[in-house]
Length: 242
Image (cartoon, rainbow, N blue to C red):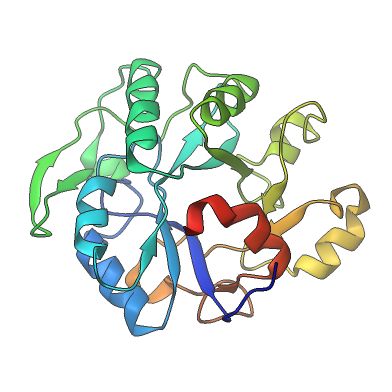
């Protein structure tokens, strides 16, 4: 298979539903910024919730921008996993599972930040009262199995980081899990990191912006306008590109 276009993607973006994100990170603003800088594919991956993805997909409709349904899950072991789904319905089914497996901890807005839902007019409509940036009750294996059972794909997030990465929390990527792609943080040189950790070299890797501000969207390391969708990555993501 040959990639016919130099597709650019940013598959790690937080909306205003994530308490760590700026209030201007509404789905509409995210989409407009992604289009402005020439991205082809994005994913809104809020912490443990898909609450703003439906509105985002409606806003992205007919825009020319492909929005992959996604979420950033925190496992019981405090590992962050990017979870992508081929269709919105599968993501929403997974979202129901996640909501049943989150601890009932109230969000402290003054400390953590606001968690805001938006509608198809890109207006704030509600707050999420339960804190989303917490470890769920689901293990690493349970998340991988559950997401793949719904046709989705799991990508360990920012594997190079000293906090919330699979390498830090577990010490390795479990070899029995069906993991094909890893994410390396934008501020880490992927080449040097993989040389230092040669056992990770057989994984395809991506770099997302992990953006919490509009000005960070598309900034994927040396790539200021999105990570290039290489042929190898295109093959892995083919089901999401149709």
